[in-house]
Image (cartoon, rainbow, N blue to C red; front, top):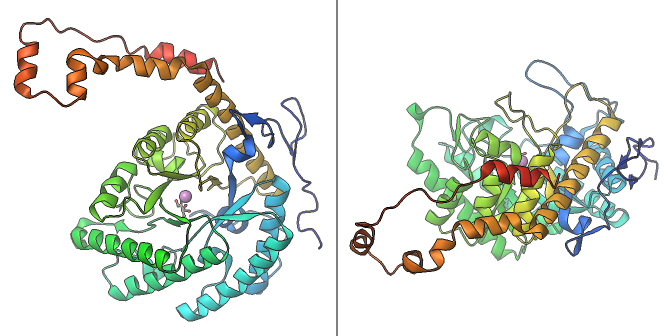
Length: 436
Ligand code: XUL
Ligand code: CO
């Protein structure tokens, strides 16, 4: 088969001193870290919508990207070429997975039936490509935010015909994900929120969204799709407010609608920062609640207040992420999906390859550092020691829930209770720096 990216070789590990821009400096797939290989820990994935469809357009300017398929005008031929390009590029980058929205990979139609027909054709193409290439599907999803019908959301639309269309679209997307051996299915509520409270019946919208997800759960079981359902938090953008604003909000939502056993979270770095949290906060919360499923790996810009979806390069951040992921026992069926796009002036195919390489290297370093922090043990032990008071004495009784307000008042009345031990934040920050 003729290569689509003849100038991109298969990327190899060459070590930190290499000057080759198309080589890994730290990601060494077979290197063992804490008993598992880097490849087993990191489970990288390419986001079809950014890496194949993204061209650098923004609200102020058109696309800048130069791609081998720029001269193709027939929509189905273009879709097939980009799919083949994705399989070739993921294989050359040794990225084992990809993710897609239904409408990323095949043209939409006048009706749902017509759109499904286009999708089926590309699904056939994907199955053929899976015979020739090792790339597999991490997750599928439905694009429920692009077409004008979804201007007020999908499951939270005031218009029941939009709710019905969205249900049909998601039904098909789950079937396709199953058919392609997808490991997970993602819900990101692109416009499931509101622009203004002046026209919004929030209770109805939340109840409808809960019912929509219950139907998805039931249908998944009905057709025997064994993948994990995931829901992706984001607080805003494109709408003013999105109901799935952060892990805490989703945790409450899943409980109310009886979905806590059926859905886990797909947590994205830049969405966490938009919500005013660190990604470590979001991963940690999901981990301790048992709902950490997968990660959309990217990073934002501290000076820009929107979802810049940059490729992840910040080693402090990747270390904190891998620390939480290791403590979670890994991501199981999830992975690290590069939901990230090139900056507009980085328009070449080589930029596209390098962006994935730097992201993979950044997570490889984060993994090594996080494993070293865990092996060293001082940080986890500091936290354990900080709460040790709850193991005996009055703390033991509080932990055993065997005391009342009256008992505690009696215990405290005549004691001099002063400040607890120092939190030692600065020292702990220096400890982390030792491993970077
Ligand atoms: C948007 C976003 C989506 C989801 C999938 O900010 O992250 O691409 O990951 O719909
Ligand atoms: Co995402």
